Image (cartoon, rainbow, N blue to C red; front, side):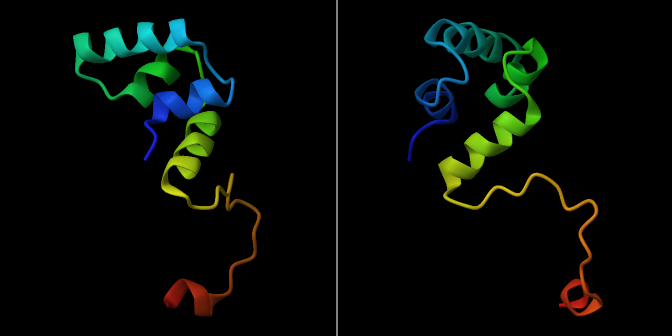
Length: 76
């Protein structure tokens, strides 16, 4: 399984240098890499979620707001 940083670099969302900077900050602060990348402003939360969906091989759904979800589904 590819690491999240590799996925972000491979897809052109961040550069190698940005990843290295974020990894150093992550080690220094103890924060997870995704949080550091969003805090620094290198990526958005949506970009992180898209990369995580690739890493975990699950479908990315941007938002459930505005979707009509039946009561049967909610109760299941």
